[in-house]
Length: 102
Image (tube, rainbow, N blue to C red):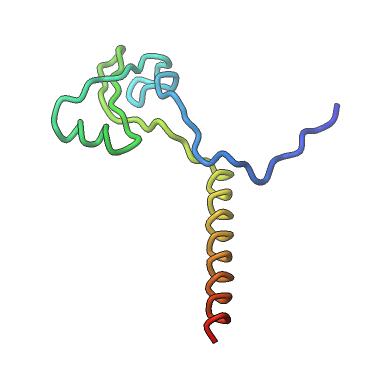
């Protein structure tokens, strides 16, 4: 059987995940986290402006924030490549504009 070649550059930077399938941070049971409603204004602001959502464990009553996105090393590498390419393109355009001004 042939080995799969590893992709070094993926176009996907941020991966969505569902924290309900991950273990509870307190009791360690799997598939017991459920979404919880915000109780205060600060929780509403955090929920609306970030990737962090409020979850509650139905086993041990733990309540806290879990992220809905996951950034891997491969996606971080991809993001850095995009940033470097954008900076190089900007420098090339800047040099071109400077040469046209003379």
